[in-house]
Image (cartoon, helix red, strand yellow):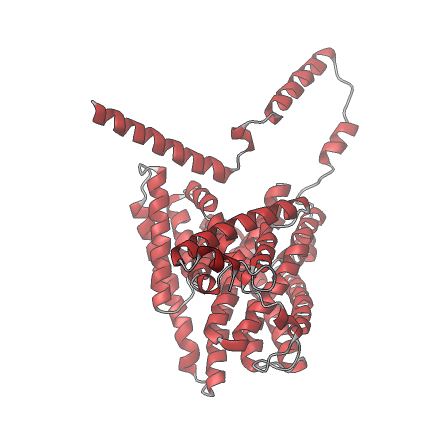
Length: 476
């Protein structure tokens, strides 16, 4: 029995509320440490889940955690919808075919290499090897985007990277859909075209339905609509779409990505995405902390009869390195075929190493589908490798941006060294500029806020003004 179960004395409602509060607060506390180490928040959330889980402090009840399975679908939906923002048709027309070729090569080479090593070398089961190989194609857009924002990198390398990362998840989902259908068919002993085609057709249907939802979102959210109502309508549509996908037991990822793509191209409304990005962190935190709680530490050092005799820690380490090789050389070959610039060709693969959100979400869905020891082993390997990827991924992504000259940390130093002799008037102007820069650096909520915070605050202020106006009218 967990500590929360003992404290709440059998009250289910109290257990749920206290568990959610603990998950949120523990995730936040761990980010204070990872921030000092310059690591992404996802790492902190997973470690927080491990600490409060059954293998360390045993604080949270199993029945509450098992009741939060829906978080995987919701978290994937928010990640996918925000990814759709980068599918602007005018940008894709510029180098769309090249990006598609690069993405297919880097995603599928990682998938093929992982499958061959797992099935041929490690002698793991066919079903497990296929699914693990499919998950190798996914890349974490959050870590990559965070690094780009921090460095303020720009240029062809960054544009290519963002589009590849966004398309990467589409390829990953299609690969996963095919893999899970083949895996289930092979486990039952009947493998035919219908069993493979059915989930693919379902995903095509989800893609079309997501586009229709994006069009509906555009109709329901005109420009005159208040910001708080925009947020309410968009979240309700995303949740409704997730519910429909859950009915048909299909991932909402592709459809939500389609929804975001159609909406951004019809409206050019980037502010809604910023509002959602500011709203979604607690949901994503709960999902990743829950994944950490489900992490089976003891399973790492044991083999699983459901997949083979190789210890999971060995499978995880090999998966970790083989995926890196596949990503790098796949991106290199794709860039070579599309005749991309040497800087893009040599360093793009390094920026595609991070893996967390989508892979963990798909692993959670895969574990739910496979069930038993095979499902547990799949989720354990992906979680363990994701922590390692999130440790080295952002570092490699930043290095690739630097080597490709998408940003240069020495620009300021070089400008100071090359500074010419100034006149008295120029010195006075410089002094005034420095005073203004110092004033800007002083604590100021407007300057310190991110775009997401500003969008959310604007919505809150608009709501407050409208509410005050309503109260004044009623008093009259």
